[in-house]
Image (cartoon, rainbow, N blue to C red; front, side, top):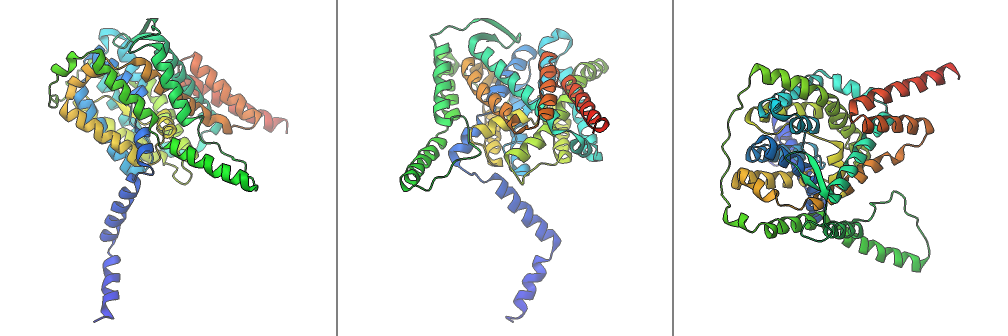
Length: 448
């Protein structure tokens, strides 16, 4: 009988269905395991500096269903963390949101959702056909770095604007200078920025000098212990909680008016005009940004930050496509992944899929418990604090370009960055960067 047990065990283990299911469960568990509880929680707050202003602006300006958006983005985040195992966040599609906010009454929720569905369908086809992986392999690293640098600098400039100026998100405009003193004043933002700098510093250095001297080694160990303790302090989470508390202090009446329960979920009604305007005004400008920043730049950045965990361009393209082909029909904001969001989560301590999964759980709970009423609270959240969170995240994204060593690569990267920033178009910067890259290659071929 004893001799049959190994055989029985072997037969069970050789069952492909059992093996695949066990492997899948093990992989999901591994992807969601926290590397450091407080660091992961801190990292989950890193992308709120872009998520909250965009969602809040669309809610105020276009009557976006905030409760439905929170439920869907919560589910997206949980699935993303389980699938990829890195802090890859789900973000609103910025170009579509910008068109909706600035285009007046001709671009409303049906047009926004039509844009998301069309963009998602194209990304799904590119991913499923394998064309996205081909684009990823052919894309010069210097062009990707240029896009990342322009996005990082754009974030930092927006962050400084949030800190210095009073914002009207419903009109997407900056107003008068922010007062120095107050519950949303400059001094508060500066103190929060200084707090994050003291706790997080400039980030982890790549090379640290080693010494053999005993005193230096002891000092080194003591310094490392202090750094480790500091790294476990959730600076971004503390700053975010401070903002929530201040929001209630600024508007105490919000507590009395709280209404519990999810908002009603309805299928969006589309017209031919909505599909046409959505594709022309929303999908066309969004598509290059999604391909470059949501797929290609994300895959490149994931290999930089997490060696051995490089994402597949095919997989990322398909997941972005599926998100929008499902959620947009019910009024959830068009979503994508982003290199900026990944850099922000990483900057504040995110190292696993559990980072975005816990954010997803929080969004899902808020969507089910508070629904659209949450916008009343976010409306009083100190914008200067959002600017501080966005500032450091943008710097982290821009700093990924420090590995560009050759003069030629720097030349292409900076041209791509300059055109993207001045022209306000990642697609235009990409085209110019590719042209300059191939011209340099041609010159090298002709004069070698």
